[in-house]
Image 1 (cartoon, one colour):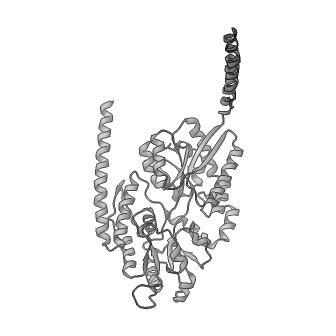
Image 2 (tube, rainbow, N blue to C red):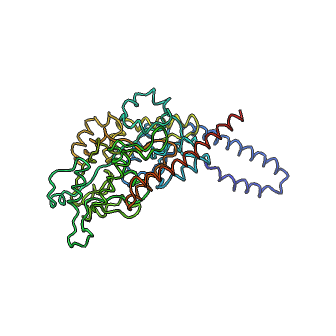
Image 3 (cartoon, rainbow, N blue to C red):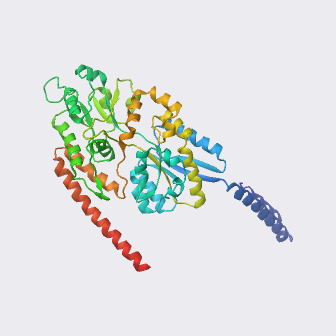
Length: 454
């Protein structure tokens, strides 16, 4: 309730009565009335405060998807009058702002973010573990089993998935037809041969007018994300026993494969850190591009289809999942946030959200629903990603993953620019070992300090 209008009235009374012998008496009456009025307003505010207002930060794009999300949030608010969620768009990159809000003790109540940053949030003590709630709920068994991996760290569940997706290879059917390609590649060797056939140098100047494939140049997250299906397809790992291990056979094989594509001359490298852009594909300068169903290619007018990531040892792809975290605030606010998480995992939310955005359902109930099954049958390109869900795995969920990703990105970039895969990975591994040794030493010193304080 707005009480600002009282101020001028009090000043007017004081002006009129300042020369009166009774001014103190009357002023006392006015002040008393004001206190009674303010007390009643406070009572109203306390009553209103029984409604818990929660903030949720997200970076949902494009704007059409934000509108769908807001409509779903509005539905929750309408059916939960005691809990009102305010969704707040925070454009990428938002990690520094998130970390700053935690340190300043003014975090949002909920956060939609990438699960690979779980370790950083846990180290800061920023997020609430969820197993005390989820283990008692039937919702846990409804979440796709392969998504549980990216929800957990150190024996705790730290987030729930809001949506998922994965990576495939978009291709230009007319360019395939012109090159005489009648079968889609299913293995790395077949993909390599197809990329060669699709690379065309019409004037013989060794600068092809058309390349078989685009690969992302850069050391950032998109490069690592795009390479991950090949790592997983070679049964490679980059974390073993909670430590970086980049020098395993699968990692070397996956990076060598990208290097072989480069040596064949069938690859166009993207502009630095711009590997997600589709201009070259849409213009016909490349015939294949690694990306997911969120791509603008899906909405373009050029001919396009999508094929699963070809296999090496096994079929594989990487998940692109958006997870929800409950930040540490107060017990009442955290319990209210869990109600919203229940809603996000409901068939109603999942089906409407995924049919509207092209993301894939995280729950079996939604994926198997009549409405979604009919929807996915009518979307053959989206069905390719849907059918890859059982073989999709996440990037490692480990404290310090950002450092691993950065070092790995540097190794991938160096290899694409001519360094040998083994040497690039060896340099990255040595850098990470120094970082991990420092982390272990720091953790040991903190542990000793804690014992001394006790």
